[in-house]
Amino acid sequence: MTSNNNKEERFVVDYMLGRLCRWMRILGIDSAYHRPEDNLNIVFRSLKEKRVVITRDLKLINSAALKVFIVKSGNYRFQLKETLKEFNIDINREKIFTRCPECNSELVEADKKNIKGKVSGKVPGKVPGKIPAYVYDKHDKFSICADCKKIYWEGTHKKLIENILKDII
Ligand SMILES: [Zn+2]
Image 1 (cartoon, rainbow, N blue to C red):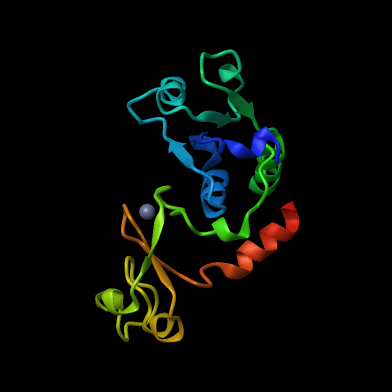
Image 2: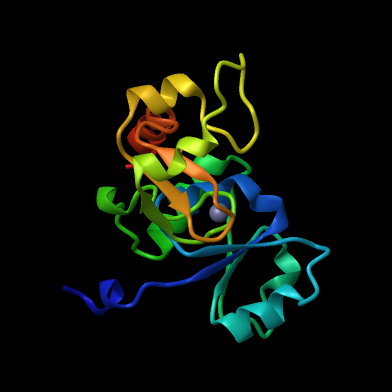
């Protein structure tokens, strides 16, 4: 094993790269999202939290940040590809969906019985924060975000993930 694989890089992703950030989280990569309204400047945040900055803002190249990576593409799939290549990150299928795409916290396995209260019942369509009844009936494996409490299940965007992986590997 090379030394590159021993240490997992952590990232802070600039606000214009929201989709990239989401996908990095889906792949299990620790990626904070930086909004312009956040109190701490992205450079300070990079230093404080020891995160590499990912941005398209060329002004940050010579900043004091821990490290800055400028993505070139305007398309999130290519941005993801660029990032994985730059940091020698191999996609680990075991790590997919171990992190919440919404807030970056770790997901923990949820006991099916304990989330019964989150089922939306017979209401048609999606109810925010609720699991559709047919999903609850069909699946046995669920995970819950330790922080924002959002619930995920096996097969969440499974097709989309497979398509994107096909593209970037
Ligand atoms: Zn969350």
